[in-house]
Image (cartoon, rainbow over all chains, first blue to last red; front, side, top):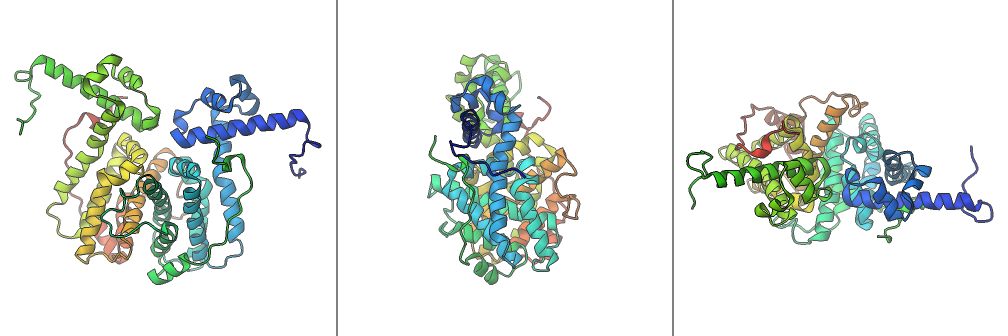
Length: 237
Length: 237
C-alpha cells in the first residue's frame, strides 16, 4: 500500500514532478494522435514531436509504443469503467445497471469527441473486445441472466448485440454531429435522446418488454465521476 | 451507353490495356493499405510504391487520394451490395432478405479477411453509415416495417442495432480467428455459426419471435455472385 501521490510542489521533488509532467505530455499526445489516426498510423517520433519532447527521452518513460498505448488504453477505458462500477454498485436492477452504463458511454462520446473517436477506433479491436468496457458489459449481462432478469438464449450474441448497438450509436451520433441531415434521412425520426433510445434498444434485445425498457432507459441518470486525468482535457489540439 | 469493356487483347489497344492494368494495381494497393491501416494513415506515395508505379503516374488515373478512395469504397461495398440485391430480388419475405444479407456479409468477412478489415474500418465512418451497405439495410428494414413484417417502434435505432450487430459480429469473428480462447470465455457458448446467430439476433430485434427468427436465419443460403474484381483477390500481400 503506497501513500497517495501528491502533486504538491513542496513534497514532490522537482525532478520527479518534471518527469511526471513529461510522461503526461507524452500520454496526452499519444491519445490525441491515436484518436485521430488509429494506433497503426502513429510513430513514436510523432508522439515525441507533438509532446515537444526529445525522441530519446521517450524511452525514459515507456519501453515501446505498445507500452504507451497500453497505458492510454487503460486510462481511457479502465478508469471510466471503474467510475461506472462505483456509480452502479448500489443499483439493484441489472437492467438499470446496463441502461446507466450504455447512456453514460454514449453521452461521454458526445461531450468529449476525442474520447468518442478513440472509442470508435478501439472498441472493436481484439483488445477492445476482450478488455476495458467489454468485459464489464459481459459481466453485467451474465449477472442479469443469472438473476433471471434477462431472457437471453445466446449470451455471446447478446453481448455482441449490446456492444454493437453502443458502438454503432456512437458512430451515428458522430456522423450526425458532422452532418445533421445525412443520417436518419428517410427514417422518419429525429436523432434526439440517442443515449436513452440506445439503452432501451439494448434492454429490449435482452428480453425486457418495450414499454418497460423505455421506462428504465429514461430514469434520472446520476452523474458519473471520472478521476481527473490528463486525457480528459479536450482543449489541447 | 458505351459498349461493355472487353479485356481481349485483340480488341483493346495495348496502351489502353496497360493503362487499365496500372489503374487496377493502384486500386489493389490502395485497398490493401487502407484495410491494414485506415485511410488516414495512407499516403499517395505509399500507394504508388506498393503498386510499383511512379509517383507522378498516379495522377494519370486519379486526381486525388480521395478519388481513389471513392473508387475502392465503391468496388468494396457497392458491388457487393448490388450482388446481394440481385440475389434477394426474388425473395418475398423481408425477414429472409435481412437474414441473407446479414449472413453473406459476415461470411464474406470471414472468408476474405482483408475485406473484413476494410469493412471494420469503414462501415462506422460517416461515409460508411450513409452509403454502401448501410443504405441498403435501411431500405430493407423500412420495407419490412411498411409490410408490417417487422414491429419496430424506433426505425433509426432498429437500423443502428442491426448494423451494429453485424459490425460487432465481424469484429468478434476476427478476434476469435486471432485468439480462439480470448473472446467468449465465460459466455458458456462456442462461437460457431456466428453468421446465422447474428441474423437471428437482428431479426429478433426487429420484432420476430425467437424461434421463427432462428428458423429463418438457418434456411439454405443461396450463394452470392460478386463480379470479378481486382479487389477480390486476397493472395497479393
